Length: 102
Image 1 (cartoon, rainbow, N blue to C red):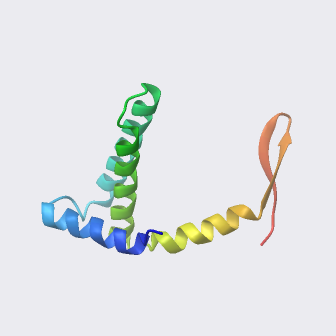
Image 2 (cartoon, rainbow, N blue to C red):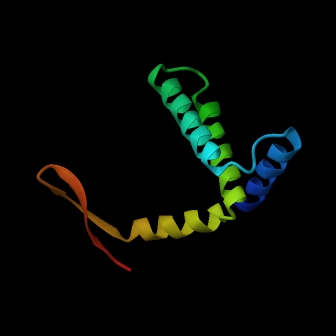
């Protein structure tokens, strides 16, 4: 299993080493969005680099998490657990959350 906390640190260290942005948070959000758009384009056009583009999205998320001091691994585990307790139902043909067990 991967250690996301360790990967966050490695991504951040590489950003610093290569001289990439580590201070402009708004720009990092925009760049993350751009990478997600590139991944969608690769999917939509059936390009062979879809996996690489998805990896770029994760790299930006890990770097942004480290910049913001968010332990993404802990947040991800908590969110998966929270999502597993949610209940959904189709209401007028639309899937909606109807209950959340805490």
